[in-house]
Amino acid sequence: MLQLNQIYKVFNEGTSDEKIALQGVNLTLRKGDFVTIIGSNGAGKSTLMNLISGVLFPDEGTIYIDGQDVTMMPEYARSRYIGRVFQDPMAGTAPSMTIEENLSMAYARNQKRTLRRGVTKKRRDYFREVLATLHLGLENRLQAKVGLLSGGERQALSLLMATFTEPSILLLDEHTAALDPARAELITNLTKDIVKQYGLTTLMVTHNMQQAIDLGNRLIMMDKGQIILEVDENEKKGLTVEKLLAEFQRIRGTQLASDRAVLS
Image 1 (cartoon, rainbow, N blue to C red):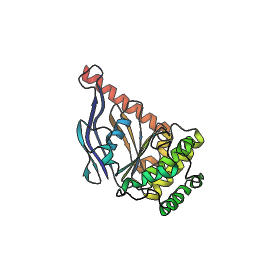
Image 2 (cartoon, helix red, strand yellow):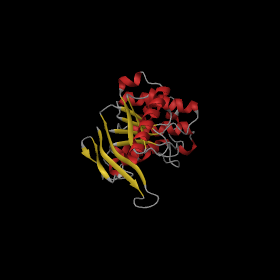
Image 3 (tube, rainbow, N blue to C red):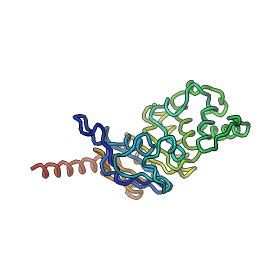
């Protein structure tokens, strides 16, 4: 479903500001996998998401979605495969447009473009139906401007817009980080329900270790542009935050010892 082979990305190469963002990343997601990604700031998580979505292109390596090489495919062309929800509730929607108009744009992502009227009665009824699954009353506010919604409501709408066309890959980029605890829990539960309902192949970045453990069937940890730990479904069942932190310290300690040996 998603395959990354030997991905390298360097910013400001050859300058004093050179930063190796990703180095030799290999990652494969099977259909229906829900993989959570953790790592400190600068580990390469956001760069990885931007490369998958087509915002950036790798310096080396290849990216396949549904068996198709999309490595150099621009973001707009790749959007038919990918749904993405960002950390900022203001991103991913058009605030000056209504809920109905935003949903219509998202719906058209996988549809043939025509000159017909954008929102038909049939489509409006469908929008009400899918909005009702959020249990936020948004199905009764189709004409409300999205900019007037709360952060949690906007993020719920963004999640719905990213998923109701059932994309090949769903990217969740710290999509609960900017919300208060109650709204974050709401969006987390909606995420679980929607991913399960549609069987979506999902990659989610989070700084919340407990969330990374609780969600999905696989977990990966990144550090300094590399995947340093992969946890499968069986291992994940017995995982705790304490064990995860201990494993991170162990790996970092091993790497530091190796670096010292090379320099000595």
